[in-house]
Amino acid sequence: MKSLLIHDLTGLEKYAGTCGMPERSEEVDFLYPVLANDYYLSLISPDDPDDPIRKQVFPDPRELDDESSSYDPLAENEQMPVPRLIHRFDDRAVLLATSKCAMHCRFCFRKRFWTKDQESLQDISDSELENIVNYLKATPSVQEILISGGDPLMLPFGRLKKIIESVKSVESVLTVRLGTRIPVVMPHLVTDELAQYLGQVDGLWVLTHFNHSKEVTQQSVGACRKLIRNGVPVLNQTVLLKGVNDTPQEMEKLFRTLISHRIKPHYMFHVDPVRGVKHFATGVDRGLDILRYFRKRLSSIAIPTFAIDLPEGGGKVHLQADYFKDGGYPDLHEKKIISYYPELDRSE
Image (cartoon, rainbow, N blue to C red; front, top):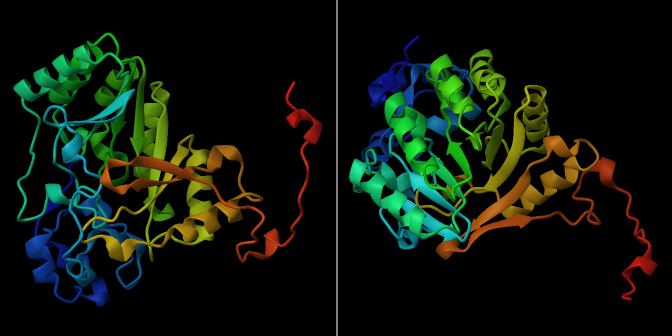
């Protein structure tokens, strides 16, 4: 099976249905080019202007409203000791393998990789990979590598294999994570050959990216099942997106469905303050309200960690809800303070 990549508004327009193309689409596309594929676009309900798939892939005039925010608010470029390696925390680092993706998610926090006025990274070179390996050998505190991009599963199998094996050749690197949206947006790229290989790599995890229950299809579940059956643990990262998935009911449906297929909800992120992305922001309180709603409705295996990525390279911060606050949901109306064995708090 092959997917058709769609690089222009003309190709995208056939999936617009009765809703038509958004206003100023050409202007948005000029700065933030459209990229999609026929599989993911087939999930759109053509007559629904609020379709959650549509909102993730179609250009939106609000992308042009913010001209002052940074393309790199997380200061990733400033935290690269060598090109393509972000080293923010002592024990782990991010390797940017490619700028290629199967689609341009309109909420992308690395939107700088594919804007018309920015220089694209393309694929990692042999010399860049060698420099990263040398840095890791000289920095044994780094024990975990996240291979990201772009999407590393867009690379040819042989190239991806070389990157993984180069990183794993460093004695201090114990764990490798692959950050990919391919199982969700172009699932046929998860081949038996790829799944079998990844299952043979000790310490390898896959982090995929479902945002809405409509994305959980027979094809996307099949891609994840290939990985799981070959011994690859699959975690999921969801971005909280205004108008897409920012209701507790939708999030509950998504996370229940994922765990039924042995995909663990890992993170729920608030959208990053990236230029051209802010219209997706819900505010942190919305995420906390959703956590509050989960408390009596979902088990721990279905509840992800809610986090924000701090600007200026501050890194991830995990957020917890105040469960004394009812959050406006009727099933959490009771307010009661319970003491937990206060005598255990006494110091010896």
